[in-house]
Length: 160
Image (cartoon, rainbow, N blue to C red):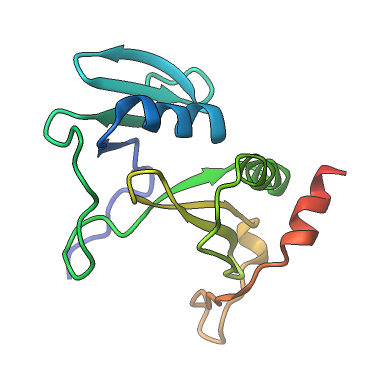
């Protein structure tokens, strides 16, 4: 069996093809709150916390295009990890204020997650991880994730 990947490896950013760059920027900047770092030649780059970019958007091969039809391969969703439960609650508030419909909301034991689609049909998971020492584990020490309904009222109460 090959050795595992270095534990310091992380996924740095996602780059999406979109149909309408202005519409995509409005969603990621105005709804989710990412900062527009640069825009050039049919592309835009957005980030949190001053990083060069977490999200790249482009219309190079997709301007005016449509999402892939059901039954095709491709990205299921990408995940944006929030540092705290309160930060995730703020994301829920932003979505509600923008009238963005959730596709689902789950308590996975290790994390709490909101599921939705962006204006181009790309799947998103917005989540926060609980502290590792609270993750549910089985008798053999393996993580036992769950998929229970997330109490959205309790989550939004974090903002009070």
